[in-house]
Image (cartoon, rainbow, N blue to C red; front, side, top):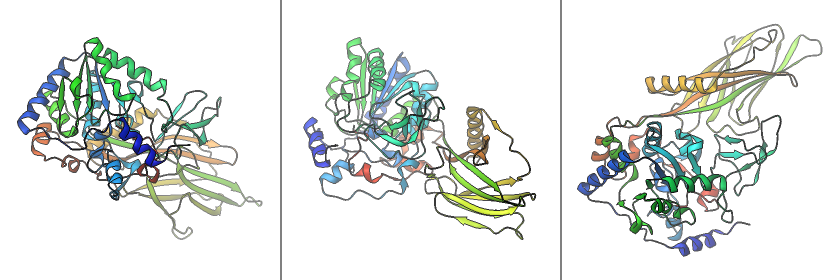
Length: 471
């Protein structure tokens, strides 16, 4: 059994409650410290970044100990703020994407995260260069073969429990488990071991947006000190490790990192989110073989029974309006059943209406149907398709681009399955980091991001039942 919320709160306070007061360095001091940090990063041979909840607050995800943090508000008996976006639509912050660029430039060697929002992985940090100490709300793992599955929906369980899905490897098929730790769960060696290894190798461990109070994770950065490395802390609140740090910066993480990237002359790449869905057409010939009873389903690429969180409704129309009646599918599963003449081809137009948090309201997809012709099966290189979609979305500075990545046939029941990739968000960051870092007032950085305001926490997150981003 998990600890109750009150017990958890007491536990956190017992760990050591450094004041929740926020501090801001004076503008001239902040500029000087940013340049000093940039110089340290430029000279670094093995940079490790250690992140907490503060890195995601500009994404609309609340922290825990800040003045408007979840634990602070609940402790004061205040209601949690209403969010304008669901948790699964949160986009990476400027800092998340800056870390991606530092990794691509060969400067950043490893990222250690205490957060479970999955934004480091979604931003583009390679999995082999990332340790998610407390798990990932959108990740399932196979306990048998070790396969990992990143979902577009929040996994329904926590505490390393079995979920409702199985490993897709035909040779395995084991029941999957969630990856988010509950309070009694030990940090997994799979994440902890490489994190400890890289901290020992680091010449700099840069701590971003973490109060460094949760053990044993908070002690990881200090392992760099034994090998002559340095610790740098960027946080709005004081931490128990400040005295061990070579540099402490009190300021918004995005504002600090924007200045660092400008000093290093590195551009922050845009974030392009690509989601998957599948169109399934199942058919059955009538007894007299004149008609086909068919079913259209717009489903999640993670399984027909999985939720499709980014689509609100599907409008189905037909080019031949005289013979076919249009339909609105506004409840999941999005499914339409019809009966048509077997030997007559037709074309459907599917208008996909996107849910709140997507960068465009809808797109239309043409679906030709001819039951006399067998389905052509193929499986394109997903990475190549994804890169083409990203490049096009960045050039056009909009979303909605889509492409087919796979088509397959199923014998029983006879079905054709087409898997689509679609760009659902494009976030462009300021091209001039100096303008961003110097001109914006505290709290204004998130306004420069497209399609990201507040992010809705699930009920189980906001009640404190998940071990979420507990930095």
